[in-house]
Amino acid sequence: MSHSTQKHAYRWLLQQIKPARYWLLASLFSGLLSGVLLIVQAAVLARMIHALVMENAARSELTGAFFQVLVLVIARGICAWVREFSGFRAGARVRVTVRAILLQKLQCLGPLVIAERPAGSWSAIAVEQVEELQAFIARYLPQMALAVMVPAVMLAVAFPQSWVVGVVFLFTAPLIPIFMILVGMKAAEANRRNFQALSRLGGFFLDRLQGLETLRLFQRTGFAREQLNQASEDFRIKTMQVLRLAFLSSTVLEFFASVSIAVVAVFLGMTFLGHLTFGGQVSLYTGLFLLLLAPEYYQPLRELGTHYHAKAKAVAATEEILDVLNRPEPQGHGGQLPYPVELPLSISVNNLCVSPRIGVPAKKHPLLLDRLSFTIEPGARVGIIGRSGAGKTTLINTLMGFWQYQGDIILAGQPLCATSLTSWRQQIAWLGQQPLIIHGTLYDNIAFGRPIPRVQCLDALNRAQGKDILARLPDGLDSVLKEQGGNLSVGQAQRIALARALVLPVNLLILDEPTASLDAVSEALVNEALATIAADCTVLTITHRLSQLNNMDQILLLDKGRLVANGSPAVLARESIPYQQFISKLDEQETIARVANA
Image (tube, rainbow, N blue to C red; front, side, top):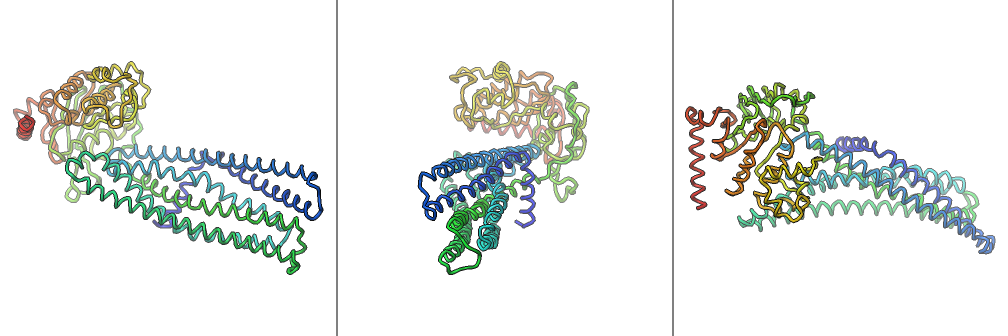
């Protein structure tokens, strides 16, 4: 990754700290106050020892000084707590902000882009890599200011005591950040590779976990285990490279800090012995005070070096986040007009063309949809059929606003390109082949984060033929369902997903082969539920079931992105040769499937 890319990522990250600026100021102020209290504590301790050794003071005379030290230690502890608490709150604010931006971007990109990468890879970006920003915000940013402010205050105190010690402090301090930067440049690249390996490992592991049953059936578990071992080993090697650089950085910082402290100690010792006479007279109080101050002078710089790796991690994570945020969104969907909910939904499509790259000639880049034109009346039951790859899913995704397109799509008399996608999608419910069941109650799975009354959820479940599900579960709507429907059958999970789609009134219901993976009994229950959908709701169904096609008002037959048949099933059965051929082949496949099952 280029240096300019890292600088851009760093600048973008700094722009996100605005919501946390007050917490950062609180962390900075508490750290500075702790540094000042440390100087006072060193002065009190040096004065106590000087009084005991040089002035033969009685211990009873130092009671007040002991109490002062105790108060200073407690005050510094409170400052440390405030600093940690404020830093954590600042980091949490930024993480919430960045994660919201990232999720909003993913929502705008749509499911087509999300499907390009494994779910585990997106999870790694949205969870692990956003978490890596915490240490940068909470510790590195305040420490970057304290590494300048606290040593500056100590220099101002040290120079009047001994200009030689002040000069040593002044000229040795820059060595630490210089070598920190040299090592850190290498660490940033190592962290970037480490994050990429983690993202690949997350996506790989989740995919294999979800497909574990398939791997067992095809006896590929050994091969998958070997692949997982290789991915884990790659991640281990890159993690150890990061740790090696971290230990190297710590060693370099400790070395220069120790040498600097040793120089100060040798100078003070030689001055006490009378071997060095320049720099003025040094009393026991002055020597002790400067010796107590010396390690603390370099401590903010050492801490900055330690937290510099947090910066390297944060920049590497930000680069991955920006790769997502910089992805172009589908064009032509910048409309702001609300969907006209008062009008019945009619869909008119004219010369619709869809390509991954609009403007590229079809000969060089074949169109996914090629000059489609059709009209769907309000409340119609429409079947979308065709062979695999014919463009059925592309058409559905285009109508929902996930694909850029050329041509015209008119919804209730209003162009889709001028309509707010958020407003339009609120009129749509979707049910796919594989129902999504989350770990939560039955109510959570039906309401799905929406403020829906429980009575309305019960009504939707009843309309989805789910009374038997409710009777089977021990706590009714409060019964906990396992992730991916582990305690449900496929048919039960599909009916719960259907209840989720029916719980709110919509103008358009999209069904993507909703009964493809169901047995005959479950399919019959789902079909009964679908038959109860409101008459004014338009239903688009992608299906390969003959029993469902006969109940449609309109059929759209696609072949290689083109519309080859459009009309009612009865008319197409008499007049459309492509439809007759498709139905004949479909009937043959269903016959073979029945014989095989028998």
